[in-house]
Amino acid sequence: MSVNKPESEVMETIAVPPAKRSFGSRAATHFKKWWWVHLIVLIIVVLVVTLPVIYVAYPNIAQRDINRSTLSITSMVISDPKPESFVLNQTQVIGSKSSYHPEIYGFDAAVSLLGAASAFATVKVPAVKSKDGAEVVVSQSLDLSDASAFSDYCTAVMMNEEVSLNIYGKPQLQQGSLPKTTVTYNKTVTMKGLNKLKGFDVTEFHIMTTVVNGRNMNGTVYIPNPSVMTLSMGNVTLNLVVAGETLGLSYLDNLVLKPGNNTVPMTATVNESAIIGMLTSDSNPYTTGVVPFTITGNSSVYNDQELPYFTNALIANNLTVELNITKALAEIGLTI
Ligand SMILES: *[C@@H]1O[C@H](CO)[C@@H](O)[C@H](O)[C@H]1NC(C)=O
Ligand SMILES: *[C@@H]1O[C@H](CO)[C@@H](O)[C@H](O)[C@H]1NC(C)=O
Ligand SMILES: *[C@@H]1O[C@H](CO)[C@@H](O)[C@H](O)[C@H]1NC(C)=O
Ligand SMILES: *[C@@H]1O[C@H](CO)[C@@H](O)[C@H](O)[C@H]1NC(C)=O
Ligand SMILES: *[C@@H]1O[C@H](CO)[C@@H](O)[C@H](O)[C@H]1NC(C)=O
Ligand SMILES: *[C@@H]1O[C@H](CO)[C@@H](O)[C@H](O)[C@H]1NC(C)=O
Ligand SMILES: *[C@@H]1O[C@H](CO)[C@@H](O)[C@H](O)[C@H]1NC(C)=O
Ligand SMILES: *[C@@H]1O[C@H](CO)[C@@H](O)[C@H](O)[C@H]1NC(C)=O
Ligand SMILES: *[C@@H]1O[C@H](CO)[C@@H](O)[C@H](O)[C@H]1NC(C)=O
Ligand SMILES: *[C@@H]1O[C@H](CO)[C@@H](O)[C@H](O)[C@H]1NC(C)=O
Image 1: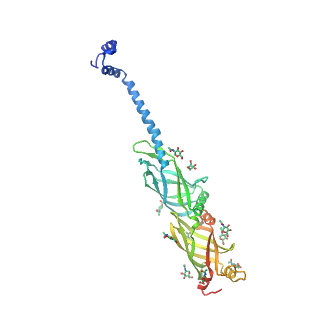
Image 2: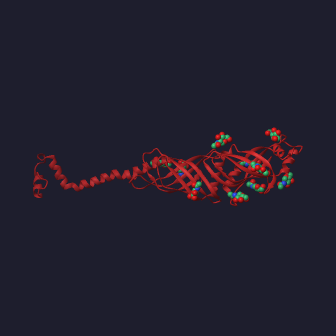
């Protein structure tokens, strides 16, 4: 039976008891009449299957993979610091075990100390193809949205073995030819801090034969930096305190703290008569001539501007060193 029968014949055949017709011819007739219903059903099925994949499963998988990914900071350089801004050069490395490698578009990320009430700055994160080991290099001048929040971060870095930084943003992401989808990026990065500058030492200490700019002592300090941070702290001034009394100031000029061991020159303005007076008095508690100094933070000044965030971090941390004053005096021919 031909499919192209005139309509009258079709009407006739319908009158014939169905059992006598082949399945094929019945199906053909059915499709000829109801093809549009099948097409609509097919379209609905395709949409019902693919739309949730594209608009539910794909964004979910994308978000899941973002959730599972890790971030580590391998380098962080803070330079040209000003009270309300600094230049940031940072390298971050993405960790991901996903088999998808979507393009993550550039986005604004709010950066805060984990648990802080507010972010201290918004970093422009460049686009990156997400895959294990992908590097994200941030290099920009960063305006501090909340300088006091940054001060808290700097103090946390100074005082702790580890600090946690929260990075939050809503980047757009795209996998292959699928549409863009927006994900929530909320990562906590744990990085090493300065750990109270544990190990700090004054490795050399001399009385200068000629006073320069009021500075009468010089030497070398050793500052270990276990973090991956390079900090331009400008001209750092520290108080030299003995038994609760400030006997002088110590200067670390143009201090740039690099990762690892830092050995930097130091100068100081010390009230020598007060120290000698103390060591020669009847009540001198330091009979060996070795005096315990407490070094407390005074200020961090860069291009004549004080940087409260570094100053506060310095003030938060007290260091103690023992200086052999007898030895320093002996070097210039004085015995007490
Ligand atoms: C991603 O993490 C957030 C916060 O932990 C959670 O609310 C969300 O359900 C996670 N999404 C997926 C798809 O795993
Ligand atoms: C840091 O970033 C700034 C701004 O993008 C750039 O000019 C400078 O060369 C970078 N410095 C380093 C050490 O990468
Ligand atoms: C990001 O995640 C942290 C820890 O999981 C959570 O405390 C914080 O509220 C989240 N941030 C936002 C903006 O949802
Ligand atoms: C300290 O100053 C003296 C001059 O008074 C100089 O000879 C010496 O090299 C300086 N030492 C250091 C470590 O800067
Ligand atoms: C830093 O100094 C410590 C001891 O003072 C030493 O154990 C360590 O190897 C040094 N690190 C580097 C990178 O030189
Ligand atoms: C140095 O100490 C002596 C004795 O404590 C004190 O009289 C003098 O004012 C101090 N000098 C300075 C410049 O602080
Ligand atoms: C810094 O040193 C100056 C001069 O000794 C002193 O007046 C000032 O109080 C010190 N500041 C701090 C925070 O210790
Ligand atoms: C530190 O002080 C010296 C002398 O006052 C000055 O020449 C230099 O520019 C200062 N450094 C910074 C980073 O401000
Ligand atoms: C640091 O030492 C000074 C002087 O001894 C003291 O007044 C101050 O409270 C100490 N600060 C900290 C954080 O221990
Ligand atoms: C301090 O220096 C003097 C003179 O160099 C020396 O005799 C003495 O042993 C030193 N004291 C200590 C505790 O190192």
